Image 1 (cartoon, rainbow, N blue to C red):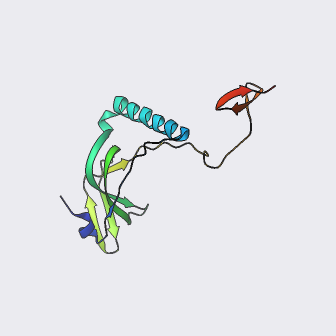
Image 2: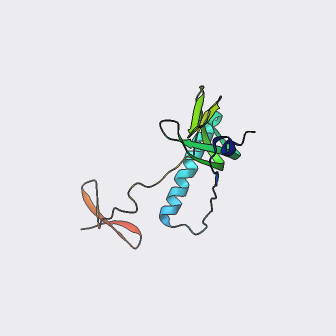
Image 3: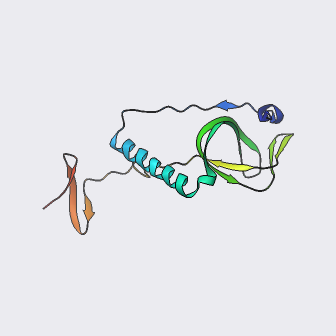
Length: 138
């Protein structure tokens, strides 16, 4: 296997991921959404969704200039490009003959950290949360 860090003169980063056991409600929802995404990818796109071992990944900008090199592992979506990709770092250049785009399936609750309200409207009626339960106000 090629050592792209040396070939391209770029320092490789090491990524690490931890797991949390005490999840908030937001964390539980996000975790379950992630599980549903994974189930969908396994059942409908299994050819392109795999748990990869430690693999060297290169990040490039739109012009093909190298931005980052890291080793990564875990469940990833793999999209074959069926074309060569040229990576550049200054005068150093490397051509990837069978390039594959790699994506880490993500889910997040857009706005959850910034938006807040006191009540919500459902079917034309006002509701609030009291003691963790959605109740209609009078």
